[in-house]
Length: 409
Length: 218
Image (cartoon, rainbow over all chains, first blue to last red; front, side):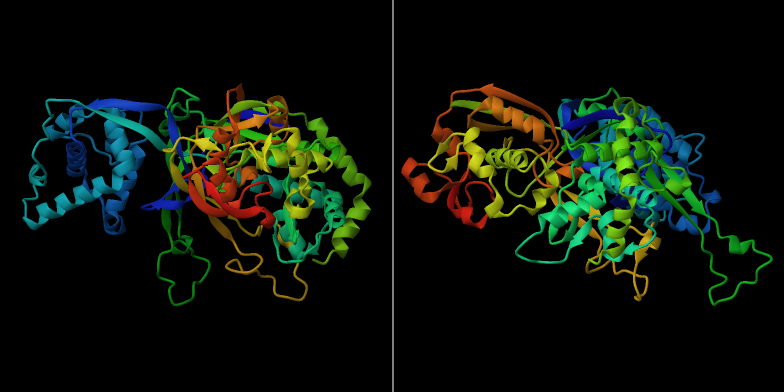
């Protein structure tokens, strides 16, 4: 078995989307882990007091926001924006950086509320950051309820009186808080496989000169196919023909009719080298960032083209945000090939060569995301090994073309 | 033959509905050897063609017809969470696809080209172990040659093994059998207790003829 364990770094921001959104923020895909070393810290606050202390910090920040400069649509979504900026600020290394990031994100110059400083001093780095990272929705909801209560009491608009909060007091005995699990952002093996499959198959079609192919066969090559027949017998010779007509099918696998070709290539998940997995000194939180993109409605500035339709006055512009791995994030990754057949091993090597030539992964590639520095993989693999595969395709071009042209699935 | 404890550390979470069985894994390795080392046949094996079980005595001791190897053991508090596996039709190079006289469109909600987002129960196991009685050196040789990951979806990176470590240990047959499914008649004879379940008790575990009412570890 060929096992390639290597590391890579992100060159630009890297985004691999999950099914989850946090408000308007699209988050990275995450996987549960048990921490390499359980995290313990002493706290002078009970669980509820810890949350109250953080809400006091947030209240201080909220009071200092210049709402006069926020208007219209933005004001309507102000709580969503607050939640996003809170989550983004929690990617800091300590509580002071968190506070700085949160204030900067709102353009706050100074905070006058002394309770903020008291609360900040009571909390340890870990308890503040953990609570914000894991309970941001609860914290924002608490803040919002307090804000609404203050409003219904018809509190004076004087900012210092907006929130009427009792200062949090520390308890006499410190409690030990233990953390054993977390959700780590990572890149799925399937992301790599999908990307590599498409690179390999379009390269195969171009090399062989395939310009048209049965729709089902296209799906078999580019997506992995499907099982749509149920018969008692399977034709091994037919299966062998498919692999001969496209050796990459032997590497990546596929489903054809009632047969499954098990791919010889195995692709692991890529994880950031971080303290939580015991593979680095920094927390993975320090590698995360939030990127925003905008879509401008150019119809508003169009002068040479007359616009028609009923909704021509409506604005079609947006700002969207997504969580990314910051440029320079180090990752560990694994790839293996179980075959020792020369052609399959060569096809595997060629596939890695294609990936090295086009080192991108994840989404939003069209706006500069997902480039990788694969220099470690480059050192650990030999591109010349791929020549057996390319020579095979050159030598069998006509038969392969004929096979795929005549194939009806 | 000697008793062994095989320790595994995992690189990534492991996906399974029933804990992986060491005898199943070893019989897969032997099957790969028997089939001219060609892996891409693996998905097409049928019960009657599966000769990995016939070669299993090369590696494992048997009690009656039951291989003396346990299922994967791990800490009971290993966290479980829902992961997923995704697949969708690739539109980027659709110009290559011949739709014949039909409209050039596909239905991604149902049918052959539907998109998948399949939930997978993933267990975060840092360290697991198997017990077995057999030829330890041959077992480790087979595992190192053929096994990169165990459980479901190994090619997508689930259940990847970081390290394997074999330790000889004193084991008797009962200690192994009580950690794996055993047909109820044999379990009653040996005084093995556990939960009753209709399941397979020897590889291939997907073969219908290998299913019976069994006692499995609770």
